[in-house]
Length: 466
Ligand code: TYD
Ligand code: MG
Figure 1: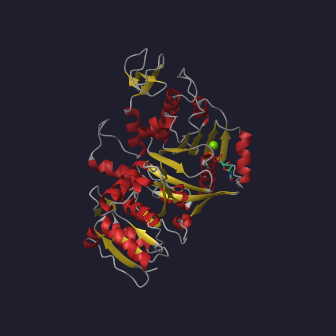
Figure 2 (figure 1 turned 180 degrees about the horizontal axis):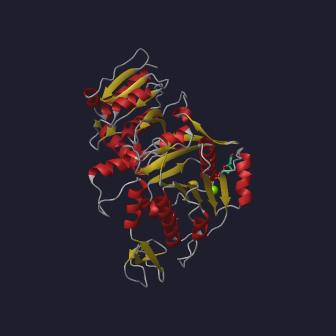
Figure 3 (figure 1 turned 30 degrees about the horizontal axis):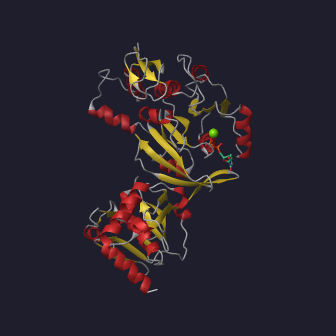
């Protein structure tokens, strides 16, 4: 029998304590402690062993052969949408719990419905897919399905909001996938606190997770998140799910990026691009956002966070101001990174960047954290500052506070991927050339740089040669 352990969770910030508290010691909220029961985890672990058809020799430990077998058992259920299957390293795994987050209106319900439809069409069994929409009425989901041309009797829709009632209605032998849209709109009978609050979210996620693991049915949990991060709920359940995928993208364009933030069944950092069309989301190639304009300040680079590089374009606009403190405004690159790189350029090249505003942008609304993009950020700033159009150039490398240019990880793969672009020049750190066999080709020249002074001179030379 599973033992229930009671803890108290702050409904405002998620603070947990074994004891009741009147005032939350973390966020200071009064009367926010809610009782929360957690099941003993041994239940789920022995279920995993049963799932793989094994007797667990010890209730809590597996020998190494069994552990390997468990891994092999992870056959993939293909969604049939190529870019999603690639993102998930081949497809869904039995009992996998995926958190799909994103801002309202970004396309979470749309992609979820498309996945449901594709799985239903691709599977040659009569298993059902259960779509629980607490967000919208059955009619509204039906309308969206109609718009997407989805008509499949294996797909069942409900707009019930109590998770226990819903799970009771799902026949585990007949279920192939469960979608919960969204975790903020469902509630558990066990919990006496507001729907959409942290405690309810935790409870709902826990119920679905246990159900998924027990019967080996994958589930997709949709969660709203806002840019301001005011809704802390979804972030607080990331650690209990297997996979976390976020939708990124500017509201003003049709492009949407799905990025794997965490994956117990494959690499994280994988990215794929979609376009929102009148027929739903369509997969796109990675270079969709790239433009080839004859203006200074545009540099190509790649982000490498998953198993492959992804080409993006950095844009900088540097403009003179009369005051001494130029502003730094950035979309897609952390503004602190822009501040640091411009400080390095100011200091080591003796440039008056303090008297300039710097605006940074990344094509397609992609967010960049990969330090391998730093060289391109510096390149874009210098190109705009010098008003130098330098052609279609790709750069990859990191920048040190001392003005040195350092190798970026996986430079070889980045360069190979960059060669697919119609570029004239690739600039990489000098130190990178030793460990790779990157070579100039007839159309694409490779230049190396050791420090930002050399980068500066290179950009000046390219400008002159124009
Ligand atoms: P939706 O999936 O409802 O977003 P979320 O679940 O993340 O809140 O999609 C939001 C937008 O997409 C909505 O404004 C309508 C638009 N849309 C299309 O452009 N084409 C379509 O085929 C569909 C279904 C939606
Ligand atoms: Mg929705």
